[in-house]
Amino acid sequence: MNSLLVQLGEKMDQVRSQRHRLIFLVHTEEKKQSLTELLKQLDAVHMNLSLLLSERLKEHPLNKRPLKVGRMVSEIVHQTESETLCFDRIELVFHPDLQQDPLRLFENVSGNKTILVCWPGEYDGSALSYAQPGHPEYIKVPFPQAFVLQI
Image (cartoon, rainbow, N blue to C red; front, top):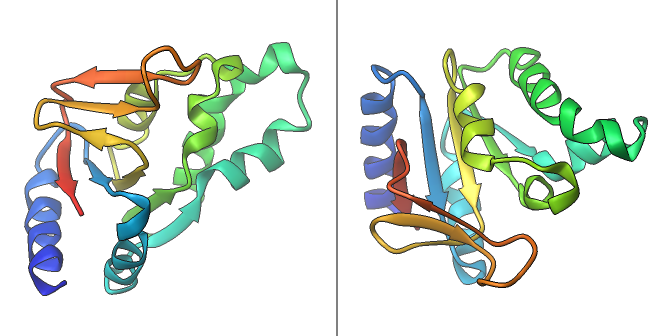
């Protein structure tokens, strides 16, 4: 656990000088507890993004929701005083009805604060992926322009 904390601390130091202060934390469900323990040791606000978005989106008609997501995530980031935020439970942003590019969404809000994203998919060393090919929520992001740490 300590080595992961050191690695994450190093990545957070490195990302401060980047245009996008974004780190993806890739984990399996089996490692979720380790990730939760790691995040408790950081000075970061930990948020369930799907819950926060669903509460806000339900007030808008379905056809307007794709246009609202980016603004809502930006508001969440700007309303948080901490310099480091961790978005967990991000599965809602993959929903086809919302028409989002998750990587761009997180890049767009990571300019002034460090954003940690608990990525519920896989990383093969060159691409982030979520879901399986053929699934409506499937996405593969080759060579993400962000730091990736596998838990």
